[in-house]
Length: 205
Image 1 (tube, rainbow, N blue to C red):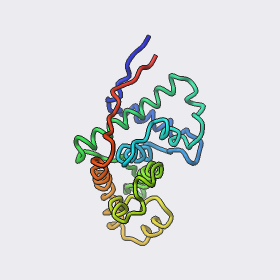
Image 2: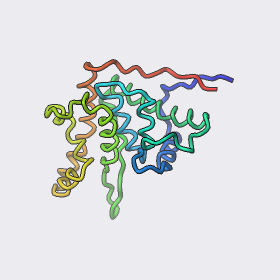
Image 3: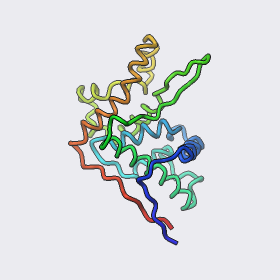
């Protein structure tokens, strides 16, 4: 029996957990490791100067390899890819219609009873998507890199070495600038790229 999968519905907590479980099961070191990294990745996919089709970015999620064995069945593939597409659409619509409510999916680590924000995974995911279209992103343009700051800082050894020399309050300030940078980047490219139109749904059997 044929039904219609609505790709405009935001994921609920159970579905986020399901997607997190799938991502953590991927065996490639190059794959998207967790929901925070995926959130950063998909944010850049919908924010950049060039559209990136799902058939190109989906393999990046599982590390540039063939489709994982856990998705061999059509039903499993439809389920997981549907969750990813829905989160992509939610992110795109939020950034277009209500950017101030956009809230990146950062992680937290607890050390000696104190919670510390972790933005590295999100930023790494973001830059993975950027590198799918590096020329279009104009990474050699200082103005572009200034706009993207501080996202790249949290993704490289040089950046991490620099962060280690900063006071906690300065690191927290830079972390808090990541969400603002994501909004500004989306706004910057919005009028310079083909309009991203989230699909309304697709047919599943």
